[in-house]
Amino acid sequence: MPALRQHSIEVILANQAPGGAFVACPTMPDYQYSWFRDGSYIAYALDLVGEHAAAHRFHEWAAGVIVVHRAAVTRAEACIAEGRPLDDAAILHTRYTIEGTVGADWWPNFQLDGIGTWLWAVGDHARRWAATHGARDPREDLPAGWREAIETAARYLAALWRVPNYDLWEENGNQRHAYTQAAVWGGLAAAAGLLDRPDLLDAANAVRAELLDVTDQIGHFTKFLPGSDSAPDSAPSGGVDGSLIGVALPHGAVPVGHPAFACTVALIERGLRAEGGGVHRFAGDEYYGGGEWILLTAWLGWYYAATGQRERAAELLAWIEAQADARGNLAEQAPQHLIHPETYQPWVGQRGPIAQPLLWSHAMYLLLCHALEETS
Ligand code: BGC
Image (cartoon, rainbow, N blue to C red; front, side, top):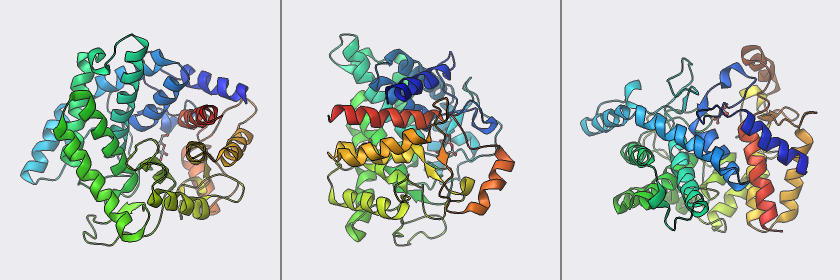
């Protein structure tokens, strides 16, 4: 639907601050922050639709924030070296205000996936930016401030990747998560290339080897990795999470055709997709009752398009388009098939209606449109 594609671009651009940050959702008070995670996918989508300057402004913002908060990384490295627990001054936050300052919210901030995803996205953007500016090598065109930010973010991930941290849904802070580790791998691999640092690739490979270990044991990826604060030697639990699609797409820890990955997607389709509908985050999700997430549905469609299953991808695209409101705005989740209907109203009471428009939903819709166009 060209109208929804165009509207998605407009919603995103209209909600980019002059300094480059994107608010996650303009109408929800709790979502007035700019997340590295959401923003990286949004910037990637902008690059795919040719809005390179806007994507560039986001990366400019993100690089600036990391440089301003770089003392946290030195402190994190010292904590790890001395065996001390990390405190708030030793972490890069997962979200900042649009001005790049630390927010006053109560949400957990220690999440490594957003920083990993930013490194992957800035690497991708640097290649496209160089190509549109006639440079043959993206490293030639990298602004000095970005280089420092990339190096700082990579040091942070290399120091902390073994430490349990909150997942991309901002839950389970005492665990380690396959999606997060894939994002860390993707980020470190991108930084290794941008900075010519083979040592970063060694760290990336160690992260990936551990991630693949689980698949050797049980044949597919799982939401949690074994080993956490509470149960260091626990075996991997068999449960999946919709975000595991990200292990291959975009993070490339394995190719989309990898058998363990195909098995993981089949488990997501069987266990987390509402019949004929969208994709839930994980079994037992209670956030706003645990509806079907637009962005995960687009993510699954992206996988189907990338593996030549166009009809399935088109079916998911049509479902997403049917969820847009009269103005064409896409929400975070659709509340038709709730896992826990009893938790829906309490969340509405606490935060207001489900976030809409959610910029990340619009971005993932654009990624799916693009994947379908590419394979037509
Ligand atoms: C989600 C995060 C997301 C944030 C902003 C949270 O509810 O769990 O994944 O980054 O909203 O969109």
